[in-house]
Length: 264
Image (cartoon, rainbow, N blue to C red):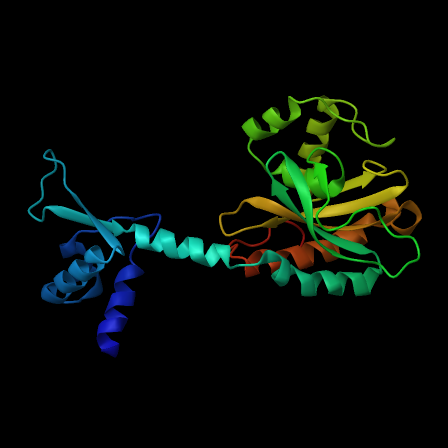
């Protein structure tokens, strides 16, 4: 039984982005598994939805008749895994570590349509608290936390979001779409966003992207406080620690590439 299971796992490992389909002969030749065993495994996997078989076109010269690829069962199982992967629980220990280092509020934001929502927050112990709270929504173009998410969306979605009128929240809120586009470009290039008095007067925030298993940015991680506690001249120090934490969180939710910004 264990040998059969090993052969089955070996078979699944063949299917990659570079070669998503295989014939029975190719599988047998590559894995050194006898054809009768390959045939039985393929039959079982197709019947249970783990593999799907597609007939060759009439124009293709082949005596085998079918090519095989991964089936919808893997998509179903992947969705179950994704649904149960609670990014908040994964991020929270690393957010608490950042709060201990800086004693500033640490926030996790999530993209929800054309808005962002604060889904987790670790409060500072300072007497002055930020206006943000878990569950609060904000536009994706204002504030470092939300704008970092927007920076990594498709050009079409960014254009659609910025086709709506901009609302002025505080003295630092971007006033024009051109200004937002410039800030988004800076975020993609430098790997972080920095905002002062954009959603609330007298507040400052630094945010970095969190990448998921598809390489998409649906979350951002930020440190926020009042202007005097996070001066612009010290922002690189805050950014480095944020990058380190975001890199760990990204890897824990399935991001396979090296974190693209300055992790030590």
